[in-house]
Length: 347
Image (cartoon, rainbow, N blue to C red; front, top):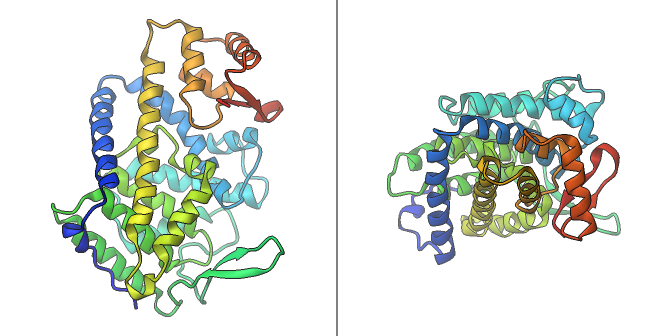
């Protein structure tokens, strides 16, 4: 059985690229923390946008989708879910809200993990919060339609013990000042996904737990920039990194750093986008047109008109539409989707 022990992080030969990533993240985190204490309204506007993007991105990775209009209505509690996908979206919304509201006091425990899983499925007939009653497998579906087992997780019989050991190993390592919390979080997520403790919802749970662990350690960029949406936009990188890290995992020979490097790249990109978005929102010396342009150009994901309206609240929809139309004509940005789903991004 896999041995859950993160003490290797204390003396690990950390790749140079990882060290530069953690250093850049720390620098941007300090900058954000200083701004947060002085510009609460700016961050509140950013959080409103990120909340919708987080719910959308994490569910879309698993093929759980609805229209942007319906998604926003569900996330903002303006409508009840109308089908199974929307029910799971509503559940993720509630689990995310619990993390945002209670990250400082929410323990990393089996109880917390099971409760968050229960919330994800609380609007469905699925009995959430229970560990898998039978063995499960991570499968690929080939272009021919043939299914292939990509990874065999921990057996159902061994899952309770594995989850207990995972949590205990995390807390043991978290108490060690010589172990970087960012490296530890990445390793924890790899182990959680290799256990695959639930029959469904493991991917979404891993992203919720990553946010919770980041928030508890003072890295809260995910509140204001949706990490989940960035993963969804290039999810093949996510699966490649996880696949590499899980090779020989059962024999304690997996390469955790294959996933850690990916995890840190997503977090760093989020801090950089937050830095850019803050500059846009808070630069009152730049006229409305300039701030609208910068909002789209600084975003790593497609931006909707309603998102721009939140980030640049003093600009009317008419002004936003006029600026976007001109940028499209100039070829600076491209338009994707149609109707309420229309969004804009750099080519």
